[in-house]
Image 1 (spheres, protein in one colour):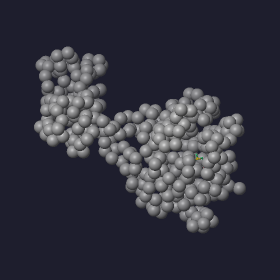
Image 2: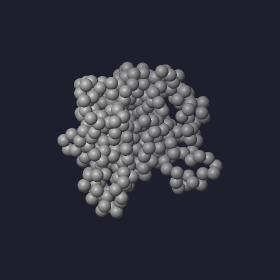
Image 3: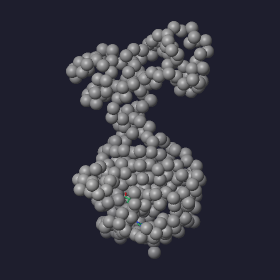
Image 4: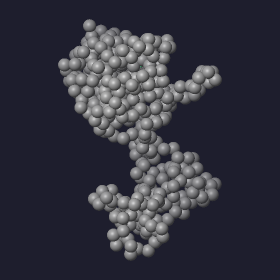
Length: 415
Ligand SMILES: C[S@@+](CC[C@H](N)C(=O)[O-])C[C@H]1O[C@@H](n2cnc3c(N)ncnc32)[C@H](O)[C@@H]1O
């Protein structure tokens, strides 16, 4: 399809859920000023990083002051478009990251600064090893988050590869007693089959090597617990007479704490009151490289996001549009969009590149605006979005979102 045909076919669709602006983002943002004021829930900024290296698709070697001036002007135009609970997420690497952080503080308010996420985008391998004695090789990129009123839609979790050895207790199916996980007959058999001694440390090894044990753990996660001293506030609340009569022992008591809230499993020990924390609190569906969600043990994520270097190996295949350098994994965009928006919210990307943000936002049922000045708006973003709309694009997060096509978008050329 030629760009002109693509232009006509997409513009002809009605009920657009997206708007692709082909042209400079200064013009694009001016175009949005009257129509999108106060509507943008997430603005994702992925500008040229100013690495001063030759790039196939865009100029990445501006003068530092000119780069900052460009970003200052851009932020000035983005600001009025933000919803009261809007979030600005800006990704760069070590070249301009610190300067951008200060500029974002200045333009959006220092009080609006939430955090900076370090995201692992590349491994130390290949040609990078040649530079290992001249510099510290790049693994991380930095994502600054600014929001005047942060309202996280969903916290992010990462898959846990290891079983925490502290989860060594097993409740009986009726929850009335508990013993050692290692003493369960099925677990013992699996340990014996693997030639491992019946010790707690063996459970961690077994979890790392046996698919059968992994699925057994997931299936029994509500009965596998770790035990630790209950917080003082909870102890005081539980010492209400009911427990004082109990002898120390293996019979736990289930109580809601605080009253009316989540169940708290406790037991009396010789030294006080212990809380039992079920492993099931850590079982959640998470995105994994290859982008299909699976139920697994997880950890609540903080500001260190590992694992995206694994996605980078296949990123050129995503959306069917190879885009050397700068293209982001769909899984990363999905995580950000999930955290900061709900279906129907407006996502803005003034540096669209190959159209990752638009494609992901579309598959996740968000409204979006993407702006791109380079020819890739037509050579990459248009075919990528057409494949998304038709349902042909089954790469990236399509499986995780069960994407089958739908919606539409409008392409507008800025004069
Ligand atoms: C790092 S790339 C973005 C990659 C994108 N996130 C992806 O996953 O494909 C930056 C893009 O910003 C575009 N760009 C740079 N300056 C621009 C401007 N003033 N207006 C619109 N687009 C611009 C470049 O042409 C380039 O395609």
